[in-house]
Structures are given as structure tokens and as C-alpha cells.
Length: 250
Length: 334
Image (cartoon, rainbow over all chains, first blue to last red; front, side, top):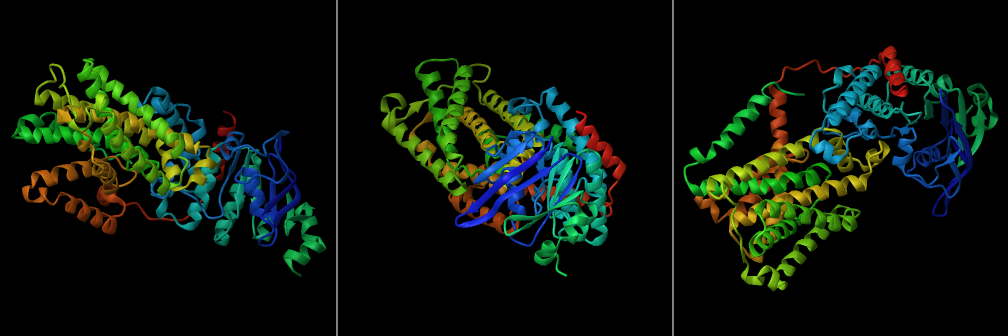
């Protein structure tokens, strides 16, 4: 029951972005992934979610190799993500954006949809209530009917999380979710992430706000120039001399 | 999002359309209305391709031509019942859509548009070259519909019914999960993938559907023309379909419908404009692209939003953690 990278190597041309990196994400844990700019955090996240193929090593879910599986296939296996720069559908409502996350659960095919068969109505009701509950849950009650292009930055971030949760994921990969948030909003984000953990979702948290990461993560992995320099509990990582030297500073 | 008067508005429009033969005045206007409905059968399907999934097909006139010739040959030359001939036109064009879409829908936007353009040009050349089948440059006569659809009114009502059906089908696709998936393909393929939308298959599916409606439109168009030659299917017509959608607005149904009506009717209704048909398209297109790039449909939305009571414009995110936990756990227990 894990999502794991095993000895992953990824090259872009002559540049080695990741060299034999391993990371294991368990359900019900928050795993922080930190490191300086260009250390390979987002690259690793893209390898997990399937936008990149590794040049060496494997991506494994529940002991099944998925290194070559498409992004869509991985979504079906319970891997969801958000993006560093929120990628919403600007002309659709907040509710529609969240409901998009339920795409895989809509059983009706194209023709059934075109003829609006009962199955379509049932799918739609189910997805709508799920999306509404999640939107209320992450704190977007006030914006449900609004067009997504009218949202402010923090609202966009929380909407991406709601869309990700609408996928009913076992693992949710968050790419710098605290970027651009105010301290109060970061508190809300932390609370939302804790709820996900308690509900058994495995959360991979790629983030620059290190104090935030140390506060809410169960384990932390630190990358530097494409290699893991320290892995452990927040306290262990915080005190590691190498981590302090390359990233945290004195 | 529903505004309560929508059902009333639909009823009024439907009543007006059904009774149109009694108030339109002359037969020419009735013919024009039937032509608009025919164009809409094609554009309503094409709208899912262009307006929703964002694939810029400018070559649907090629499919229209295939549908028209298919109908003329089956119903005319071979005497098949027109109802079956219409269905056959649709099926053949759906197949053509599949064969055209398979290689070309993987291309990025501009190259896809070029592929559809090439397709339309090839179809014209084939209709010219295959003289024993299509009559070559001389063309083919097209039989009318059987009674009770053989009068101008009957023809209009039949075509109107098909146009309404296409509108209903497209609307069903647009407002459900499929519509959201298509908009994701258009606005952010990365997001589409992330939530599991099979991008290529989704594009191909709506393209085949648009092929089917283009084929049906071709058959209806042939009947309205009563005689078809390769010149009937000039490339401008393909561009016209595309422009109707762009002017109407991407991601809407009512906008492109209005675009179709305005662009077809105005140059015909206002006599001095008839000669300036292309000038008029150009001007309108320029005005829309510069002033309301999101099209007529967006103007409607803005008007509706304007008359709706405003709620407070709060932007404060305040999570409800208990509700969130329940929502996540409900999802997992399924």
C-alpha cells in the first residue's frame, strides 16, 4: 500500500536532474520534500504522476511497476496532484472545476451522455454532491458558483486541492501548495492537510516553507542537486549538518 | 446556475420556430430558415470540436460534401428511401471523421487545421474526378423528401426537428462530465490528463460525432439545393462554419447558434449587404475578436449575471474540517 520511487534517475540532455533517488509515500502520512531550487523536487513529482519517464529505477504502486503507465492510468490507481501554478479551467465555475476531478467515476459513455440516459443523471448527482461537500470542506462555500477566473490566488490553490480530492485519491501530491499564501491561509492549508492524513490519504508535500513542512510532516526528504542528502523525521532533518549547510542556512 | 425563466424562454423560441411558416411571409424566408437549421446541424456538432475541445477544424465543408453526394447517389441514383439515405450519409461521414481524425488529431492546433483544410480540398478534387459517380463538374440532381415532407413547410419542419435533436444532444454532452472533460482538453491538457481524461480519445470521439452531424447536414443541404455540383461546396463555406462558432463564443451553444443565424440571414435579408457578404463577415469577426473575444455567448452570460442579485464578493477561504473529513471518507468508502 505505498507509492514509491526506487533508485530513480532522470536526465534532461546532459543534465542529471535526479540520481538514484528513492522515496516512499505511505497512506495516512504527510511526507515533506524539500531542497533548494533546481534540486529536482518537481521533477520527482512529475515522475510520480507520470508526466516524465525515468531513465533508471522504478516507480511502484502497491508493488506494481508503473514507470511507463500514462498519467491517466495513474489517476485511476489513486494518484492525484496539484500544480505549482494552479491549472484550472478559467471559464468554468468553481463547482465544475471540482467536478472535473470525478471524471473517472462518471460511468456513462459519450452516447449515453448525448442521450442523457438515467445513468448520466445519477453520475452527475453523485459527482455534484461530492464536489460540493469538498468545496465546503476546503473553505470555498462562498465561491461555488463563481467562474474560476474570478478567484484569488489562495482560492485557486484550495480549489485545486478540492479537485484532487474529488478524484478520491489514495495519494495526493501537492506542488508548493503554500506558495503565495498568507500566514493565516497557510494555517488553513495545514489543517486541511492534517484532515487528509487522518482520512488515510498519503500526502507528498513539495514546499519551500520549511518551517511549515517541519511542522506538519511525519517524514521529510531533502534533495540537493538531484540526490537525497537526508531522510528522516522532521527533527532529524532539521538538525542534520548537511541539510543546514546546503539549504536551511545557519 | 439555472435561471428560472429558461424553460419559458425555450418554449417561446420553440413555438416561434414551429409556427415560422405562418409568419415568415414568403417561401424564400422559409427556405432561408431551413438553410440555417441545416447549417446548424453541422455547426452544432462541430461546436463540440471547435468550441469545447478546442480543435480548429476548418475543413468540415469536405464532410458536408461527402454527406450531400452520398445522399444524392443513394436516394437519387439508387432510389433508396431518403430516411435511410440520410442515416447512411451520417454514418459514412462519421467513418470519414474517424479516418481523418486518427492521424490528424494528434497534431498541434495549427497543423490540425491544415490537415482539415487539405481534406476539404481533396474532397472537392475527388468529386470532380469521379465523374461517373458524382456527375463531375456537371453535378447531380437531388430528390426531395417523401410526403409529408415534400412541401417547403414539411421540409422545414423535418430539418427543424433534426436541428433541435442535434442541439439537445450537444447540450447534453456539454453540460455533463464529458463537457468538462472537453473544456479541460481545450484549456489545459495537463489538467485533463491529471484527472484521467483520455485526451486523444475524447477529441476523436467528438470529431466522429461532428462527422455524423456533418453528414446528416450534407444530406439535408443537398435536398435544399436540389442540385449539387463541386462548386456548391466552396472552401469559404468551411471557413463560414468555423467563423460562426468563433463569433458565437467558444464553450457555448446559444452563442454559435446566434452566430449561425446572424451570419446566414443578415447578408440575405438586407439586400444591399448581399454583395458585401464577405466584407460583412470580416467586419463582424474583427469586431468580435477585438471587442468581445469570448464571443456573443459571453455577452449573454454577462447580461444574465448582471440581472442576478449580487452576493457578497468574499474571497476568504475558511475550511470546514469536519465536513472535509466526512467528504473524503465518503469518497474512500465507495
